[in-house]
Image (cartoon, rainbow, N blue to C red; front, side):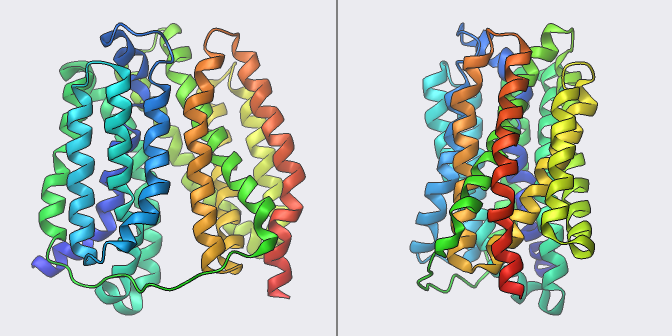
Length: 360
């Protein structure tokens, strides 16, 4: 029974990890009021875990730990830093603790994928699909759960409550054996446009996601409604699946153009219909991310790792950028995202063409 529990704990690890990482998003205005801080003061704390994910992904494989131990320590670290951060008295301390949370979370993706062949055998590919889906759904439900729990428990109680399941997860994961095979990997020189594309995708995603609670709170949304708004991230899962299917029929460039059009339409709809616009924007961005990830994979392990790092670095920059737009009309933010999408359109062909060329 413990073995079966461990299998599903590996698949579900990302669900709880990313749920905790993104849970503060709908609570940003409330957290800042609790610190008596200006709007946007939490921006560094939203950047820090993304930077931690990049740094941690370089450090964890060098520890020599078993994958199970790595996952267990990562889960405990996310829980501990998340719970401590919930009671941080100012945004600077919160940012430091959030950096620790990101460093801990970085243990999870690589170790999880390393364990799948041993735990699932011939079903490892299907399990990998479930793992990726669990990460996305966990991020959506973590945000939604934080808003609902904060209505009754306050922001600190909500964040602590979401951290608690990670303790059980660590217990289930700890005994697992297996580890990383260390090897040198090379970065394909054709990857520069692809890496810029990756950075821009999570930047646009989190830039808008960080701005929305301020705009929606001003429109009268309560904490539970703010959290529920982020269920729009489930549209990202649908967008990624649709882009993959379309790429199989029409090729990656046509699929990328369709995803980009969806993102542009979603950006235009953010002001009049926030939920529909945000869901459509995310569907397009996650569709582009799926295509970019596939292109990176075809260029080798070095490019794939660099793609993930560039993606999270873009997310880190988003936390620093969004506070600059809080005092301005929302149209400024829409225009900025529109400009980013225009740059994305210019990058699309050189970014996805290598994947097409490698396939012949």
